[in-house]
Length: 622
Ligand code: GLC
Figure (cartoon, rainbow, N blue to C red):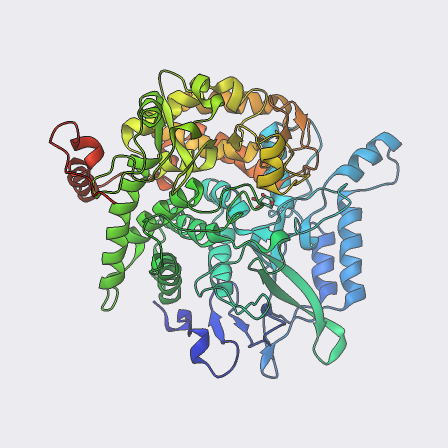
């Protein structure tokens, strides 16, 4: 590793200043420096010496933004942009992309609906899209490129939505870590690696940036939910501005939800980057290795919990609002398992990491056993639960979590097909959440958290329940929706999560990509093909909504954004993978023999399996 790439990453508490200073090299772009910032004005600052008028001229010519030359002014790098000139740039872009003279009113209003490039950028190749009929895929690429966010002239991510008609932007103008994953994969599959590399390295610098909520800071290693490139006045010079990266760890998010999934997705994307590009230099960097370890330490830290699953609050993943998923939701467990497997592959053995690797391996075994055994649900298992004995105080209880059979919901009895099954949404003492959550199930297949048989059974289930899970638009985020009193109590009467809308049984086109990876992995791509075909009937006409409502996903979601980037990217990844299924390998993981052996040892010692065979021990009498 080149000396210039070494990054100073110091635990915050060990510095006398509130922040730390880091510098690193991003691709071929000039070295960027980050100056220490105050506690409450957190964010990375990058500055360069380009004058905006030069950038503006370049944009007007239709050229792509070139990497700027960053330079030092005094002790820090400065990005010299004058506010009024910045405004000129936006005007330039609008007039380049949206020529208004000589157009019919109809065409003008169509153009007005087109999303604008973000941060004043044109498409990454700098070209104005050519006229003429476009395929849905071409349109999707144009839109994806228009959603690219630039920082100091380098592409670093994509905004969540680029909906020109939305009256309230909220935080959809930010780069969400989870939303960028399908964008990043689409770019990797297209051979455009820089944006992914930049995203990985910049977000790493945001990790554990000190952020507080009411004086409390989250654990070190936490990755933000999202970040924004802000242009702010330069300290001491009102006529100048600089760009800063401002992360949100949930301290500004609706409901103040903690983004537990961000770091896990970051590790998964990092491994995908290495596998796809063959460039292992990123994952081998000292700062990146440290970043991986910090995420792992946070996840593997001892707590009060008895279970190997991660204990989290409601809304800590894609479902980022109160939906009754606090505890041990499947989505987090699948991503956790996947991140552990990916990290194991990438960690370079060195003195001092042996304990961490041991803890990681132990957790992998315990986690896979726990999920495969206790989360699995099929007709046979429902029948077992139906006949459960309760109040078993013993070491070898069959009904370990004291589930009362009356909990089996009436919808499930008829819903479960004879063939197939799935992993339930959550498991707690005396509580099984029987809802089907798509992302957790699909990612359990992708990561091999589910066994081979279970993975096939999940896909059998998807096929058997196509009318409910897919219907008119893939793919329901969960099934079924909560209604009535249950909705009122569990969501807190959330008007956005009404039955069959948004997180409460809405259909999310972005899930297409996970469905595609899972079905390709299991050698059943026809499932994804069918789903993509369905999506293509409407998704572009409907302007790429964030989600669809109603039981059959017939309406564009009540409050859905249009031109939602991960709907666009999810579709693209599905198309690209179906055209080149072997590329799915850089996202999937196969179970290795060590894990398989450990798993079979545990399974043969499990009382649920052995009770019938050997005489059960006498339960303790209380
Ligand atoms: C919604 C989704 C969340 C996503 C965000 C930005 O809040 O629930 O998963 O990251 O929008 O698209």
